[in-house]
Length: 202
Image 1 (cartoon, rainbow, N blue to C red):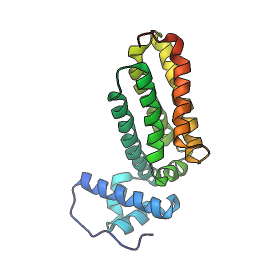
Image 2 (image 1 turned 180 degrees about the horizontal axis):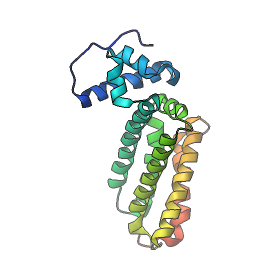
Image 3 (image 1 turned 90 degrees about the vertical axis):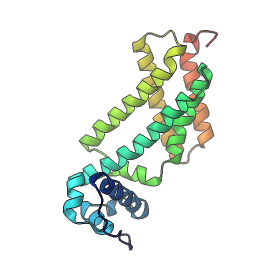
Image 4 (image 1 turned 30 degrees about the horizontal axis):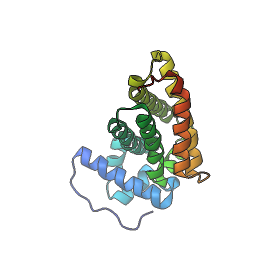
């Protein structure tokens, strides 16, 4: 448990939630997910237990709130990178590949500890499925202008891309391959899965 407690400060509800999430993330990063409970968070943040319970209700709710915040930040990085890519298929494919792996490369170790702690949690499973759907939709939106594929086929291809990206990112974070290799592999898969369906001027 952290040695230094946060001073008691009058904060509104949103500010208090922000404070608690920052403290919780620091606890996971410093001591691992097992050290984080609603009680230990209250003690470390210097607030009463009811304040923490009011914000998160359960330990699972706290971990999901932590993961949602990380996921939102990473998804925002992907959307920004795709939005700023040059309007050409290969450029968009390169941006999509780089952004996905960069998201995983820049996330802290606490993110993986949080995911491990939530393994099997139904609410987390639902959130994970929703997040994957957002990535699929983001890729479909990015590639749609450059392909003749019917919408349902485009969705299936993008689902496969996200699945491959997830697998590659897992290998990368285990240090079995470097980030550039993961990016290049995902890029080559995207190119091969779409190459016959992209107009010559795309």
